[in-house]
Image (cartoon, rainbow, N blue to C red):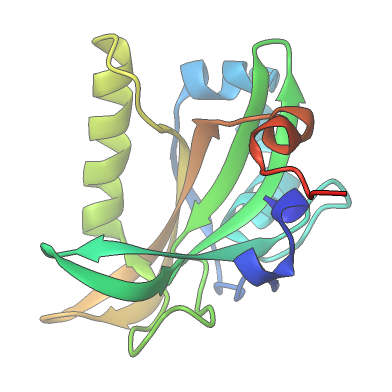
Length: 182
């Protein structure tokens, strides 16, 4: 994403969540990144994938885009609660690692930038079930929860879903972008 230029993203750090705890990790998704069994039990896993610390391999940013929303042209949209943590190069190709619920971004509009545990569990289960059925979709690496309150219809608890998506390499992106005329 960063290869597209700064008009397409804003670099920012995730907003920390207090007292994070691991809710679940998907072993098949972890294997896509080459993570060893038991990696999720390490404190640095939780801190990195909830956004409380930014590992040296990360380059966090939120993307801006435009398109239709609710059946009408919405103009500028963007990652209102998701922050791309990094693009990982793996044996199966590049994977984008994204934290959903990682806090406010410049594209959050009037929202709080957080995700709640209830909807995070639903996304996690659905994405991994679809993958198991052979449907191409994002994958859910983990859910990390926190007792931090998030206001929706009622007060709920916060969560961050770490999503994975296959992506294009920087060289593939440069082959797609229009060439400047000389």
